[in-house]
Length: 173
Image 1: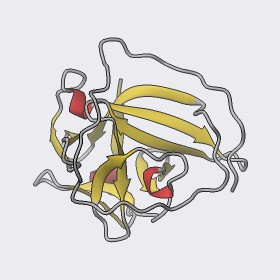
Image 2: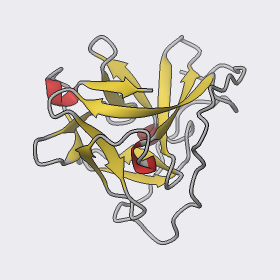
Image 3: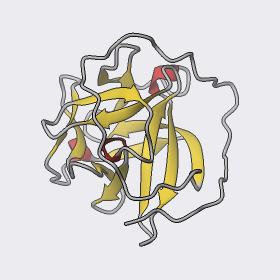
């Protein structure tokens, strides 16, 4: 579905400034899944933390592009602060991208279930766009349909959506 033109509404968080983007290659391969005609501005942008319901850990990353979970230190740990931007498709669906405040890299995944960050290409890269399933607590990758997931070993990845607590993420604001 094509994305409708929208007006930008910014919800600012003070005290957070994106670090300069990390140089070098991440372990992941960059590829683009094009989403239909993209809006130039998101309808909303805000800094959030993502907390897993099962483990109580927060989504975290590093400058190498790795994504995992750690004990929550939001908002003090800027690697756990994600700038969530929302776009609305012409069909009314809300899709989101998550940009790490510390690295300025976007949450990304592939069909193999790997989760990592890459330079931001949202909203044009469907692998960096996410939508809610299961009553708005589970994030699914727009390109793969796989859900954001984790485990007790602090790994983060994507997996077939099952609605379990490891796929249940709450926002910290």
